[in-house]
Length: 220
Image (cartoon, rainbow, N blue to C red; front, side, top):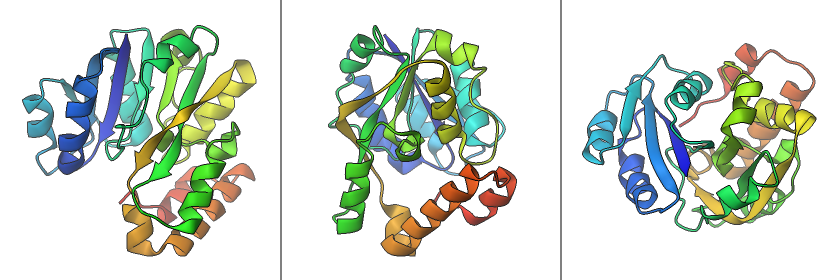
């Protein structure tokens, strides 16, 4: 069985869509929503769907680590609240984790655009630079604990985690998508947002402090 962990901050509208899908999945044994100080109906929606709801200090890595400590099952799946998982095959996860230590789906978008289509294709490649938290990261609980969870840095915690997993173990990409919200791309312009993303990741790889990089990235 899988414990699904969702960090949230003012995500009531997205949780309305996501939680009913997760509840219907036979292999999902627990859904944990960790709120980082929402001012909307995030808590109300979570409790309405009878999932495990907790509050913690804000910060995606911090919230996910908090949720992992509350998990009851041996498989952890970290999802973003704005993910559309209607096409994801959750039943694959326990099967592939008999062979691999961790993995993710690939990324698709809810907005048709050639650049985003290319980005989606690249996310099928099993490289750390093309693997992010919005693809749905799943991992054996024992492996997660050996790695001491996510590093509580303000940004790039997902890339950091994947890199550390691959240094010590094995990682797989599943051939089914998670459909991610294109809200940032639509709001900021696809080309501009993608350029920013590439620039931030490149700067991270050459060692620029994540506190500095976080100034230029907004989750919404």
